[in-house]
Image 1 (spheres, rainbow, N blue to C red):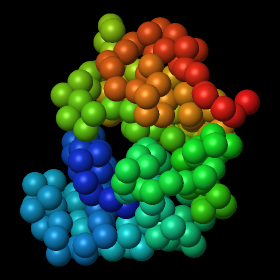
Image 2: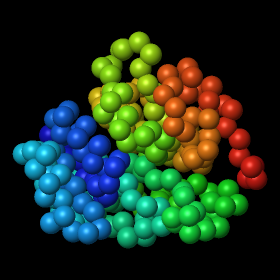
Image 3: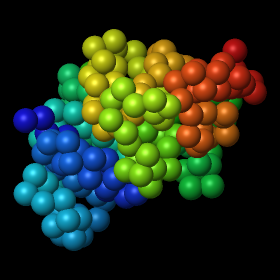
Length: 215
């Protein structure tokens, strides 16, 4: 049985944990305040969940989700994530994260910043453009007509395949936008960020995304 580690147990993290246990995965959830603050969530999730530190979640997870404020990605453990698939759900909110020069001048993306912090991990951008409640409310079985599509981006084809299979199991179709450098096409303020779109609609929305400064 695959174990999913979650570094961050807020709105997105807790919803992904719910989806994971509902589909037969074990989860280790963590946050910045300590495992003792996650007792209620773990009780809700049941026997396939336990709380731990971020280090423990990173060590236990075969797939690890980083779902914390972008300003805190420097705290993500590096060594235990070596060689692992790491899902990055983060978005850049300057009012929360402070100004980040590489993002302000659009010479990088938030996912590339996490990849730089985790040089031996396989980072895949996913789940950053869907409201947390929709993760459980809009999930549908594979093959359902007009199923909602979610976007992935990453530099490693095998890692993207792993994440795409997970997303499909969780209840969504997948659109691969390309490398991490292309993940800006689904960042805050782009046409695909937020609305419920099918594969065809999402593909069209990604094509309409515009970047202000970086070529």
